[in-house]
Image (cartoon, rainbow, N blue to C red; front, side, top):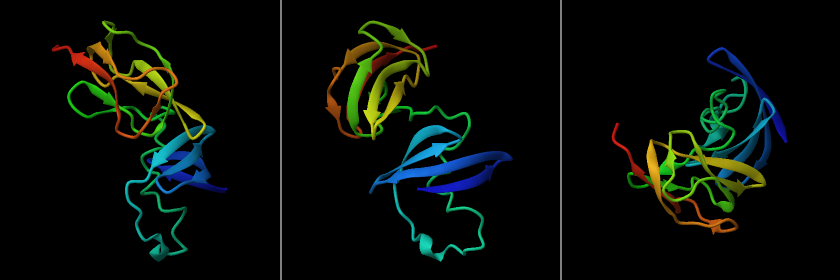
Length: 151
């Protein structure tokens, strides 16, 4: 376990790296747990020791103070909410026909012993729920389909 003190845009962060896997890092930022996905791994051995802190490229996305404690869902096709990480569906907060707004919690996904809220990305109506509580899902698997509303 390593601890780093970072300053990003004049905001101070204490980052504790709890666990590292091949494709993700479990980090605690100012006491809140975050899962940071690793898309690519650069050769970090060339970073000079005098540079303050670790290479921030992999973690610069997660420690933003406005960021939700869990990753938001991405859309595969317009209106399809997909899982950003593999895990297990813990609860579903919406039902078919329900209208949702951006940021509204759709379901909770447990991954690496952390609960992650998957949220709506646009105004819409839930037209399909493709998973059930207890289901184990893979990364990029469709979860919920929203019929987007034109505003």
